[in-house]
Length: 389
Image 1 (cartoon, rainbow, N blue to C red):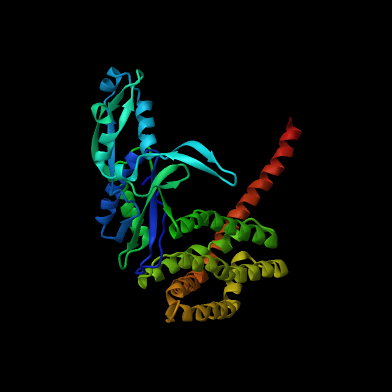
Image 2: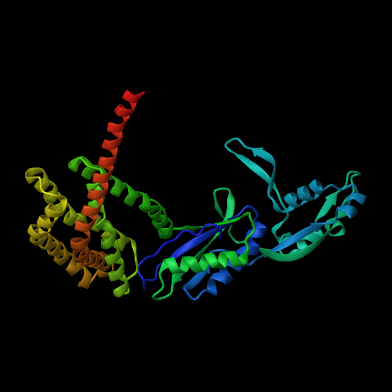
């Protein structure tokens, strides 16, 4: 399969999904689809692998010997017309009555259509007006035919469905399928794609990095306008990595898959965790503006006086998420990753940000102060240079 687009659901659930394989050529599709099916059945991460392809139908093939037909002056079109006259229900006339009309259909008698021997009774007319048995210019042979041919767009396709084995995530299964894809060496005309829930999840996960980036940019712009600074928003956003690391560590500790629900929990942490730094930075900025204290003294005072509000708000959010993490019952498999991610992120960020936020605040403040000094020195040097000239 050339395009296999899936992601990870909750581990241990039997998630039925399917992949669709299509090709411009039906014969090539019938050749490669069974190979794909057998390869997927050999993967231990997949169960109940099945396909809707039905190629076990019987058909009788007619192979025209063009050289022998040319000796009688018979063209392939004449053979097609003879077969269509016998089996194709050709309309040859219309019979009209006073109240209705009836179409006259030409075909062989039903008793003459049963079995392969019916083809031996077919005669093909020659340009000279003679009749040649079809068996003289063609050979007959049985073969397999598709009972139904599905299409996606204009191309024939087949659908392969499968379930996941216990304790196997869909993301792990995708990696195995991608490896199988490389081992099969598909032709260029063969295409494949996941369908159903997996396709919808993939379309949503494609936009998630841009969604998170847009959220961070929006937060930065709002904080920049609030504090009228380009440096302090960076201090506040520096608390977010610790929350993400804490959420991932908690998921690993409880052996919980990183599902879309857990990702929602990490997105929630963006709004919850940054309030620690906002409380500290806002108090430090207000203290410096009101009393003219240094950056070190202001952030130290903020850490001492705002420790209790930070602790109280964090504990309120943490205790609110705790029932989600430890609760059971119907739907707990969806709520649990959300609660675990939030609890883990809040715990680690509470411990880390109280130490890292003052350090980053002072570091960025010193960098910004040095740039101010350099900028002012350059501004003073330019007029002096102009007077010398």
